Length: 398
Image 1 (cartoon, helix red, strand yellow):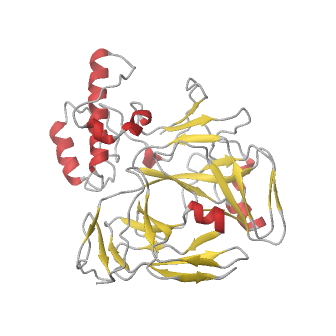
Image 2 (spheres, one colour):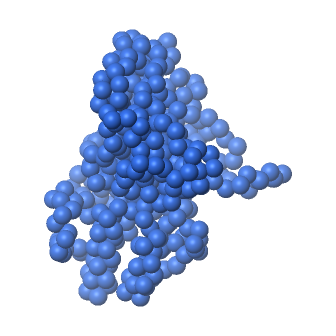
Image 3 (cartoon, one colour):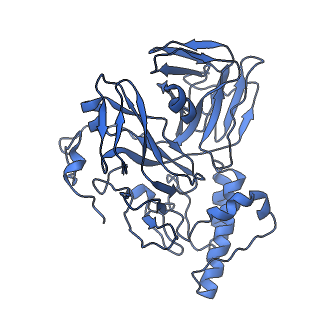
C-alpha cells in the first residue's frame, strides 16, 4: 500500500510510503506468499480475474464478512481491470452496469484506482505536513498541526491538519494518541474514527488532562493515524445466541444481536461504508462532572471469530460535551449484556435520555498468535526506542 499526495486540482505527484507488510496485496496476475494465497490468510487474493473465476467464486462464498455492497464494488473493479488490460488504457470511464445505480450517487465520487490499497491524501492548504511514519514497520502515520493553538488545562481543542484522506474500503482510520504527549503532558485524543467514505478535513481533538495549558506550534506532531481492518456484516436479530466456552463455541461468521428488553434500539450504521454501529441507551442516566457512569444498552451480541468489538466514542459527544468511552473491548466469546462506560471530562453533569446514541461499536479483525519466550528478538530500525523515539529520525520512505 502506498500513500499518494493529491493537490487541490487532483493532479499532484505521488509520494509512495509503504505500509506494514500485512497491507501489501498482490497486484493482478501476481502472487505474494502469505497474502491471499493460504487458507490462514485473512485477505482474499486479487489475481487475474479472468483466469481464476472459480477461485474468486469460492472465495466470495467464504468471505461472508463483506456485505453485498463491497461484493458489488469488487466485481465492478474486476471488470474495469479486465477492460483496461484489453485496451491498455489507464483511464477509467464512468461505466454503470445493471444494479450499480443502487450504490447511490455518492459512490460516483469515490471510485478507487486500480490499486485499491492506496492511502490517498489531499492538501487543503500550503502549510500541510503530509502524514509520515517513523520507521518502516511503524503502525501509525504522524499527523501534524497547521496552526498554533492552546489546549487549556482540563479542557480540549480541535487541531486542524488541513488534510483530507481516502482510505481503502474494508478499513477505518483511527486517530490515536502519541505516547510521548500522553506520558509527558497528559494529552489524549478524543474520538478519532474516520470512515472509508469520509472526504472532509481531518481534525484532531486533543484532550488535556493536566493542570497546565498545552501549547501547540505549527508543524507539531499531535497524533497518529492507524488504518485498521474491519468487518461490517449485516446485524441479525436472534432469540438465542450460540453457546460459547466462556459465555454461553463460536458464533460463526455473522453479527447477531439479542434483545434483553423491549426498549432496545438495535445497532445501526449511518451509511454503507460507516465503520461503526451506533449504540443507544435504554434508560435515563446522569454522568457526573469529572466522573463516570455505566450506560445499559440491554443488548447481547455474537461477533465473528477472529474479531473483537471495540466500543468507541462518538465525535459529537466528545467535542460538545467532553464525553469519552472507557474500556470498550468485547471479545468474540462474550455473551453478557453490553454496557458503555461514559467518562465525563467536563465540569458539568451530562444527562443521558432513553434512546440517546452514546457510543459506536466497531468490529475489528485481530490476530491472537501464541506467545513464545525467546532470548533474542529480531533487530529493527527502531529497536528499543520508546516514548518519543520516532521523533529523532526522518520518515523512511522506502
